[in-house]
Length: 105
Image (tube, rainbow, N blue to C red; front, side):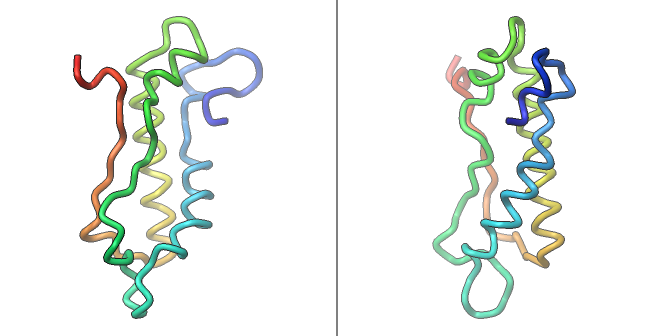
């Protein structure tokens, strides 16, 4: 995954840009409106980039947490935006979200 490269996790390995970009390039065309507008289908209100990255990051290395989780979210968002741009998608009207397990604390 985008958390590990080799056997030693480092801050750099929490970069999910390439995986998010490639996945978005494959998936986004399937959720576009069929009217040729290159906008998301009206039923798509939100894109969830990643769920509980703080828990996932903590599971990959001791001492990892919010800093690494934020890098995961931002790099995934960057990948999605680049894929949308490359595909000519108009993203207006669609919210972007990421959930954190500790958001209620």
